[in-house]
Image 1 (cartoon, rainbow, N blue to C red):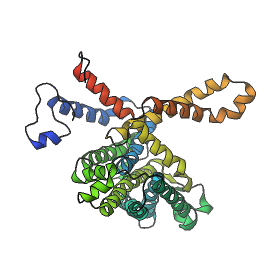
Image 2: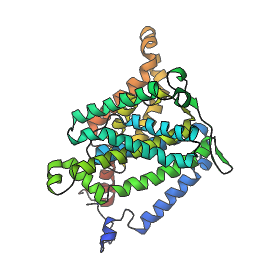
Image 3: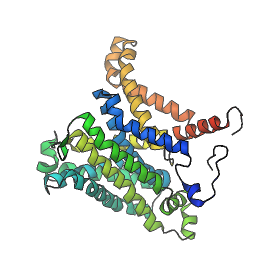
Image 4: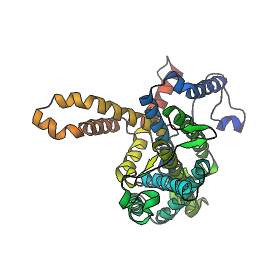
Length: 359
């Protein structure tokens, strides 16, 4: 149970389950939301806004995988493919059916969720690494479908590997064609999906997911239907991925079959492991850490390449950033295998009990 500040007591069930409990927490939340609202004004740098927009998009996707894998315990190594389903569905709704982006966005999430249910059926008989292999198969099936079997003039198949360019998203007279405008499209969506994910895991549905993850046999004996709840987990996890994919094409304004690869799926799973599986802050910490580490690795890779012999540097110089990145990630996982979120909880506990050493 989370510790409370001195003098703060929970006298009702509503207080016990509340996310924000005290007045200082409400003030901090209000200040943080105000900071998000004025962030492009305080930091108008285009490169920084591009990085922040990318982080916000992948936080939504990571939340979906966190619900599916972190809370429900269903390992998925094809999450990027479901992002692709949402992206391609959004592109289809906007180009073929002439729907607006605001209608296509939720429909894209629902489409990705339905496709997730289709590939979630094996979870009823498989678990662990066997289920992981099934989701890897889903990754290749979905990407191959985009590449070879869908209409190339709509989605950019074999004949159009350069991709399909989409028009900027509009809302009335506002055109989301700059990093600042895109921020005000992406940030509210991320806040809404974060709120939804945070409250979902505290509901009866979320508790059923955790019960299945911890011991599916005991959960079934308690009356939890594995059939329904596992498929619900796949639907919700892939719904988040579909929303993220749809927002991603609004951000990139181009869609290609090679944008959603197996490596992207593996990195999303790695992001959760780094941030902390099964924690509400894990996706946020994981995405921020990985993206910033990627930027740092790219920044220092040329300098480290100059320290190597010329012959060796010319051969591995292009991959130096990935080498540094992989080494730091492995080192981090050895030192803190439970993720940044766990370390954050430890630091909060020490701060609450300071200057005492217990807790």
